[in-house]
View 1 (tube, one colour):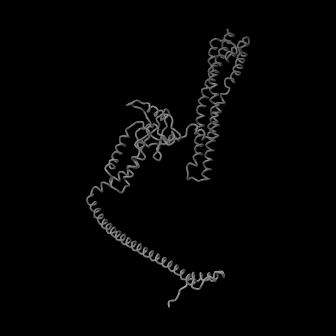
View 2 (cartoon, helix red, strand yellow; view 1 turned 30 degrees about the vertical axis):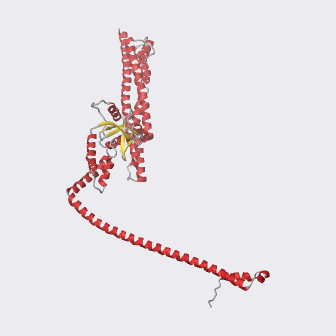
View 3 (cartoon, rainbow, N blue to C red; view 1 turned 180 degrees about the vertical axis):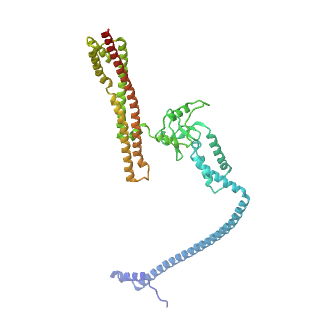
Length: 452
């Protein structure tokens, strides 16, 4: 007899049936309960069988997929091994080809090395050349060729001699072209005038000289003036084939930069400081006084000469007033007349000599003030040396500049004032001499009249 396997579900169903209401239990028999239990057990067995079959089917499918994946792995490994074998074979072929290339290249390798060396040497020259601003990009192309590890093409080889030929031709050109100036016209191209590889300036009514900095044109912050600027203006206006004087800077901008940064007259005056301003003030006062006295004495001298001819007494000039004194003392004796005339001359002399000695004083004081500025400048210099040492000459430049500039200003003020004082003194002595001569003549004339 086979044992009966009751599942939990069947037992639960039996328990439910057994715990049913009393009316239902009375109506059912034990055979009905057994039949129900058997039915439930059959259904459970069928469900379990179905699930077992599904699991076996999934297991077989996964096994099939695993087998397929392993097959693909073996195929890929075989392909990788084949590629590795091909790579090794290609390496052997490449080594052989490189050896053959080196053998066949021969002198061409040496020639190629010389070409790259020449390209590397000319590259910095082209980058510093003004002509490269007209022919842009040639320096970069040569730089790439000189640094490349591959063989250059025929077109790349032609770049070297073309660039050298452009440089040679450009050195003899005086022309205008379009270029970008970094600090002009919002970085847009403008007309630039070029004098060979030496000088470049903007092609406009007021040219601006340009410097090459970092491969770009930059206008000098301070422009050189004078003959350089007029030469640039004349060059841009010159006719074809004309021979003109033009600024040429062999250093390609360095000399122009030095000239532009040289101190102007106003800068030199500022370097003199307070002593320098005092010296210049003394010079200005002395010149005003000297010119004033020179003009007035010239006018007085002309009036005196005219009065000496007319013998007209009056008050318009010193000699006329002396003649008036003579007329007033006409009835006096010779001694009294001579005293009266001497007195009149003495009255006129201070007016004639006024301010003349002041010019001499200013001429003497000016170099002394310049010397004072020199001493002050040297004191500043030694103070800077004490504070920061002598490592940087620029720290001493201000003091030395003041010392030298004030000395020059003192001499510049003294020399013209001394000359002016000499001229004014000569004019004053000339007028006084005329007065004395005329007075002596009048005394002699009276003495002759008394003797007669």
